[in-house]
Image (cartoon, rainbow, N blue to C red; front, side):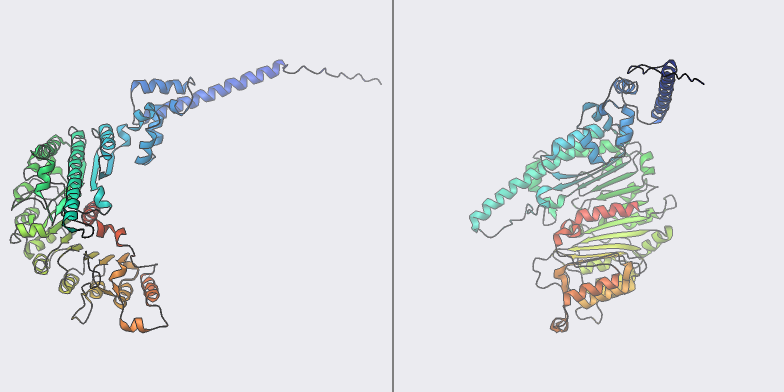
Length: 560
C-alpha cells in the first residue's frame, strides 16, 4: 500500500489564515466592548460624586476618559477630588503645588469641611495664612485658629521680663529697649494675622464652629496687658476697632453657627458683641466660650439677660467672676436645655478687679445638678489665694477636673484635702503646678499632717485617672502608695524629677538604689512602665498653661 503524505509549506513570517484573522478581529471587538462598558460604569460613578468643579475641568476629564490625553494631570477632576479626600490636610497642601489643575481640584469645598491652624506670631506666617484663608475662608464650616508668639515658644522673655544676667544699668536699658522693640513687633504682627482671618470669613454663612485662641500671656506684664505696648502698636486704636467690628459682622452674617469659642484674644470680644447674633442663631447655639481676663472694671462679656436667649446651650466656658448667681438661675429655667459642661477660669487679675459676692451659692449648684444630672465642671485656677478658693469650692459643685497653676501663691494641703472629701464621686483630673524659681525648697503639702493629702486624694477619689504635679514635694513612699491605690485606673501620672524627695532611711540603705526602686514599685502599682518627668519643658501643661486649659476645655465640651 502506497501512502501519499502532504507536507504543508511553511508560511512566511507575519502571514495569517482567514480563520486566524477573524479570531483576532473578534477578540479586539470584545475587548473594545468591555472597555466601553468599564468607561460607562466609571462615568456613572463619577456623576454620583459630590464634587463637580468647573466646565473646563470636565472637558479635560472627558478627553482623559476618551483616551485623548495621558498622565496624572489629565485624570478627571472628580476623580482627583475623590482620591485626595483620603489625604490629610498637610499632604493636600503640598499636592496643590503640583499644577494649577490639581490646585483647582484640591481646594474644592468638599475637601475642606474643617480647618485647624496653629500659627506662630511671625511675619513669615502672614503670606501662607493669606493664601490658605483666601482659598478656604469663604466656605469652611469648622474653623479653629490658635496664635502663639514665636519668641514665647523659644523661651524668650515677655515685655516685663528683663531676662539674662545683670550687665549693669546701661546694659539693662539696652536690653530693655531691645525687648520692647521685639514685643511691639510681635503685637503688630498678631493684629495683622487676626485681621487676615476675620476678613476672609466675614461673608461665610456656612460657618458652624468658630474657635479662636490668642496666646496673649506673652504680651502680659504681671498678669495684665500693658496699655503702653498696645497704644504703641495701635496708636489710634483703628485695628482693634476694625477687629471688633469684623467679629460682630461675622456673628451677624452667620446662619448656621452652633459653636463659638474665643479665648485670650486681646479684646476681640466686647460686652456688646453677642448682641450681633440673631435670635434664631442664639436659640440654636450649643457651645459658648468667652475667656478674657483683660476686661476692665466690673464689665462682663455676657450678662444673665443675654444668656436667656441661648436656650439650647449644652456647654459653657466663662471667667468665674462673670458666672453669677443670676446666670445659674437662668440655666435652671425650664426653657433651657440641661447644661452638661461648665468650664470656669479663676484668675487672680479678675478676682482683684471683680467681686466674688455675686457668685452662685451652694443652693444654686444643687439646683443646677438637679436640672442636669450629667453636669460636670472644669475649673482652672491661676494664682488664687487659699481663702478665695475656700469661698469658691462649694460642696455641691459636680467638679470633674481642676487645674492649679501658681506663680506667687501656693495651694495648701487643706485645699487638697477639701477637694478629696467634697468631690470624691466626680473628680477625674487633678493638676497641681507651681512655677517657682528656687527649686531647693518646694512646699510640702503633708507638713503638720498625719496623712499626705495627695495620698488621701488617690484613696477617696475612685474615678481619678490623671494626676500631674510639679513644684510641690512628693515623697517617694507616698508616690508608691498613690500608684498602688489607683492601680491601672490611673492612666496618667506625671511627676517631675525635682519634685520627688526621699526619706533619709531610703537614702541610707546602700543595698537598694532608691530611684530604681521607686520606678520599679510605681510601675508595678500602675501595671505599666513609669518614669518621672525629666524635662519640665516637655509638659505643655507647665510651659503653656493657657493653651493647655483651652484645648482641654474644647475636648471636655466636645465629650458630651
